[in-house]
Structure formats: structure tokens, C-alpha cells
Amino acid sequence: MTSPMYIHSVPVFKQMLTALKTILAQAAAEVAAKSIEPDALLQARLYPDMFPLAKQVQIAADFARGISARLAGVDVPVHEGKEKSFADLDALLAQTLAFLESVTPAQFEGGETREIVLRPGTPKEKKLSGQAYLANYGLPQFFFHVTTAYAILRHNGLDIGKRNYMGTY
Image (cartoon, rainbow, N blue to C red; front, side):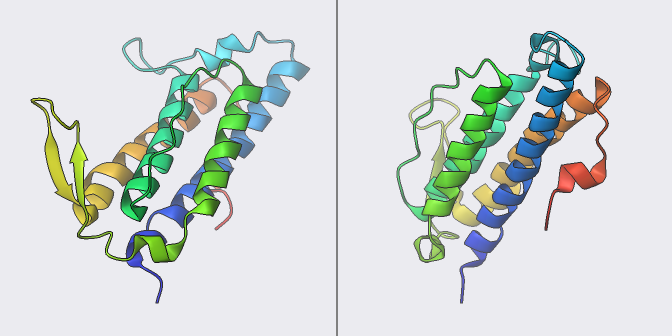
């Protein structure tokens, strides 16, 4: 039997990041077709104190890699987060999806009881079981950033809807 920790993480990340990759390709095509400066979308925000589109995508990818790695008991892939273009974000999502393909369901066995330490060695350090980490922290964070990236593009006129957000399932 495949670990529930795997079932409730990796396939979800793959579905949503693949959908986000498709949406970003649509945005890049629209920017090119309409001669819009790419940064008009890449640096767009829903509110001044929120991160721009590019950062939302980076963080969503970071959460997908980090959650999967921690639950699988492998090193979290290091990524610099210096993407500046739609092509850079596409490459980031491709690398993240490749990493997700590399982790196996067997690596997630026992992941629900694995101790996950957030912000180790700081006053904000928090220890969670793998189950609590995934359900109460990781997935909500991941979905927040994917949804915000979608909302930024939708707010800026990209012709996308719920079907685009959900992708293929």
C-alpha cells in the first residue's frame, strides 16, 4: 500500500504545479502577443504588502520541494529563487516537477510520525509531526501561494478559470 503521506502530497503538488506551469505559459504568450512588458505581470501584486507573481511561484515551488523532501527523509533541494522571466519560472517548475518525480512512495513510509522542525534554532522554532506538518502547515501554505499566483493573473485580465487552476486530475 502506498503511504497516505505520499498520496496526499506529491500527486497534489504535481497536479497544481503542472496547472500553474500551463497558466504561466498562457500568460507569457499573451504578453508576447500584446507587446506587454513582462514585468507588468511578473511584478504584479494583489495588494502592496503582498509578494509579486514571480515570488508567489517561487514560494509555491519551494513548499512543494521542501514538504516532499522532509516527508521523504531526503535533503531539501537548494534553490536560489532568482527567476526574473516567464522562461525562468517555467524552468523552476520543470525542475521542481522533476524532483517530485524522483521521490518514491516508499520514502514516505513513516513520514506521518517523522519530526519536522520549522525555523530550527530560532525563537520561532516549532516541532510538528509529519502529519501535522503536511495537513496544517505545508498544504495550506502551498495552496495559498498557488492560488495567489492564479489570482494575480486572473485579476490582470488573463482569460483563465477554475478548470485552468485545477489542471488535470
